[in-house]
Image (cartoon, rainbow, N blue to C red):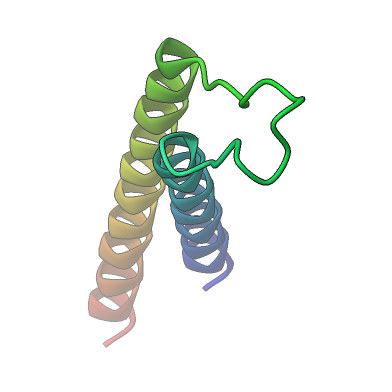
Length: 82
């Protein structure tokens, strides 16, 4: 069913966004300035990254609900046709 594929795609995009943001946060504390002492270490705006994590979570949940609705519709259609 096309709706379920779209919902699954949305879930995958949200998961990718969540992982990217988590890596950004995790990488902020591990960046070393010893290799290039003349440059300032990169900083991460934790409030922005926290908003990105929440947005990814919400996007995943919304896509999961669309997937569930598509599943219910498909079951109902099978019940009607059977």
